[in-house]
Image (cartoon, rainbow, N blue to C red; front, side):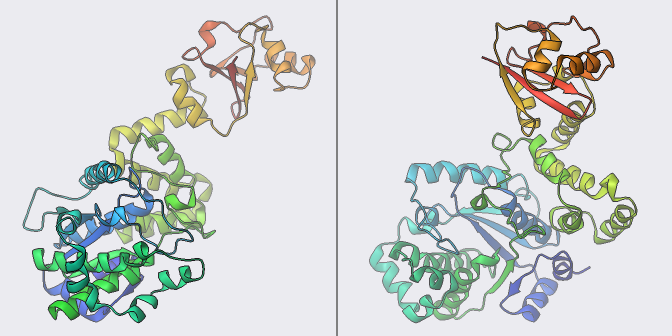
Length: 420
C-alpha cells in the first residue's frame, strides 16, 4: 500500500494543504520532512509518540526525517488552544530538557543508515544569532496582523489576553520551516492538528520569502472513545521516560484500553499490517473477554518503547500481582505502583500481629468469627502465600523491604499494610 494511503487508513491524516500534490510527491520522490518538539517537559509522552511513529513510517517508506528540538521556541511557549499563558522556563532548563528529548527521539528513528537517515537539529542554532531588528525586517514584514489574528489559536485567546511573546510564536515556527528548507531542502512539515495555524505560517513564509511551495500534514490529536486526549496537559500522561512511567505502568495502561478503542490504537501505535490487525479484530470480536487486542497492543507498544526484556518483566509483575504469585519476588516500590488502586491500611509496627486480630482491626473482615472462617477455609494469603494457621502472627519476614505486607482475601481482593 502507498504510504499516504496507509497513513490515511490508520487514521493518521487529519488535514493537508494539498492532498493531491502531497500524495504525488510522496510517490515520486524522496521527501525531506520534519516535526518540531518543544521541550516543555523533561520527557515526551504518548501524544508525541503518535507523531514520532508517523515519522518512522515515512522513513521506512524511503523519506528523510528531520527531528527539530525547539530550543528557541521552547523558551517562548506555544499558545495553541491553551486557556492560559505558559510558564516560561529558564534557558538552563530548556537546554537540559532538549537533551533528554533528543535522546528519546534517537530510540525510534534510524540516525545511522542510508541516504534517508534521520537528522537531529535545534532551532536555537539559527535564532541565537538572529537579532530582533533582523527578525522584524526579514521575517515579520511578510506577515500581516490580520493574517496572524485569524489563526484559531489566537482568536481563542483574544478575550482572555495573549502576550506578544506567544502571539509571535507562529512566526517563529514559520521561520523554522523556512530555515530547514534553505538548509536541507525540507518541503513537508508534520504536526498535531492543533498546530495547523502555526504550520501554515511556514508555507506562507516559504511562498513570500523564497517563492517556494511547502506542504503541511496534520496528525489527529488522539483521543479515546470518551474524548479524553492522550497528553500531559490533560493530567493523564503516559511518559516515554521509564523513570516517570514504568514499563509496567505503560503495559497496564494498554492492557486496560476499552474494547471500542483497542483496534483503533493498534492501527495508530503499532507496525502490524492492516491485514494483521483485521485478523486480530476478527478473533477479538469472537471472544472479547479474552482481551486479545489489548494484550497484543500492550506487547507491541511496550516492546517498541522499552524493549523486549522490559515487556517480559511487565508481564511477570502482572502475573505475580494478579495471578497469585509470590509477592516477595517484587520490591515494595513495584508493589505500591502495581496495587495503587487497592486499599491501604496503616498499622502500628509494635501492635498485635495475630492474623485474626489484623484482619478485624484493619477492617478487611467485619468480625473475628468471619476472620477465623476465612483463615480456616484457606481464603487468606500473606504476600501471595496461603495462611491456614489461626495462631499465625506477622513477623519481620512478612515485611517486603521492611515497608509493607500484602494481605489477600481470595486472590482478587488485596489490602496493603504499611507500618507506622
